[in-house]
Image (cartoon, rainbow, N blue to C red; front, side, top):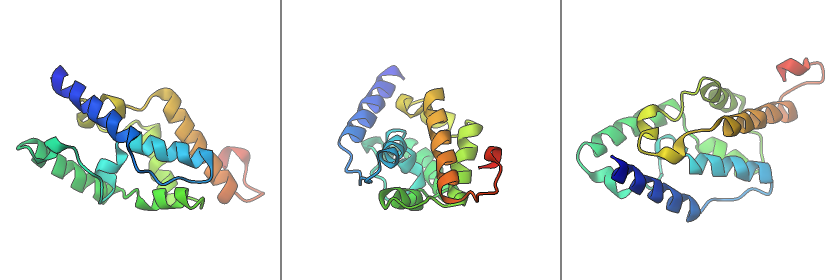
Length: 151
């Protein structure tokens, strides 16, 4: 287990370092894009993620295919990434979904973080993502008469 987990950790770190990530002109957007990539959200929530070599192994293949189908059907990150790269607002429905999984700690799932140790979201990272969501809402969606606690 530890050998496999160590290899997965190494692969995930190399993947993050070598990522051909599109960049935004806003540092805050780049931070969110980096977070999504570093945590491996794109594995299950985009149609085009490059999967690790072990994704073709028996058992791993079936588990990963199931997780990818369920993840992609539940939430597609493509629109979020496109909005961040273009320095446009992320849709309210996408912000709501990201906020919900951050508040209730449902992503990434335990089965993923059991092998992908770097995929676990720390309390600091969670607070940063929730702060980014609040800023997006206030900047793009809150009207002047909206109470501060509802922005």
